[in-house]
Image (tube, rainbow, N blue to C red; front, top):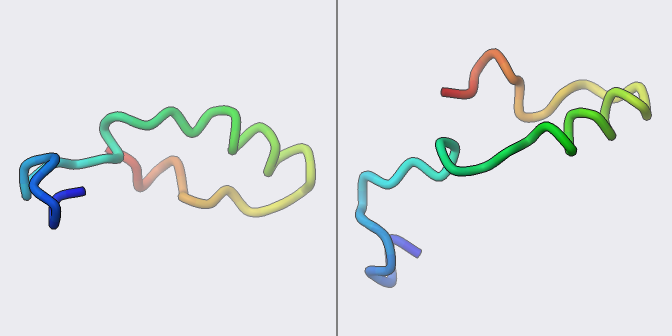
Length: 41
């Protein structure tokens, strides 16, 4: 989207995404949490 000019070049999509449902599903399946919650802003 940044390449198309729809968002600024410095837009951090991680600040605008809720991964809680993904992590819940990963935990239920015994998978490693990806992306790592500790590495998220």
